[in-house]
Image (cartoon, rainbow, N blue to C red):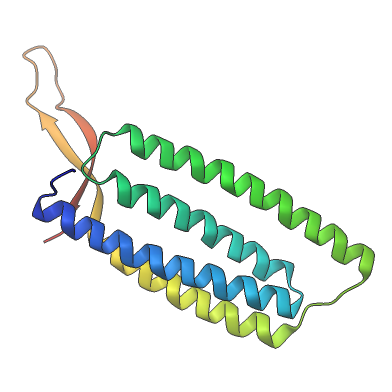
Length: 156
């Protein structure tokens, strides 16, 4: 079993909360999209399902090798493509069947999704995406050489 330091525990806590929020939004948007006959809500639900999968992989990746992050990004892309194909098929079905979505349900769920996504953004913003490290200039160089290193360090 992997031992996690205090920073890993905080990252995992944040990722778990964001995962639960996104999965709940996926369920709510999926049910509302189906009941309201809305391809837009179903597409949003599919996006949240993909996000949930990525947050789950990220949660599992904390404290592990960087390869996990690459896997998470690849899976996200593949899932989004699969969900996009499903949504396009649903749009085609709706076009052939002549169904019309229920507007008020779409507006309420869009507002709820915006609020939950804003909350997730605020939670994730507590962790910086990159840190910059600079090396001293070489004797023959006129500028400082800097590189960006990916990290999850909490902001002060």
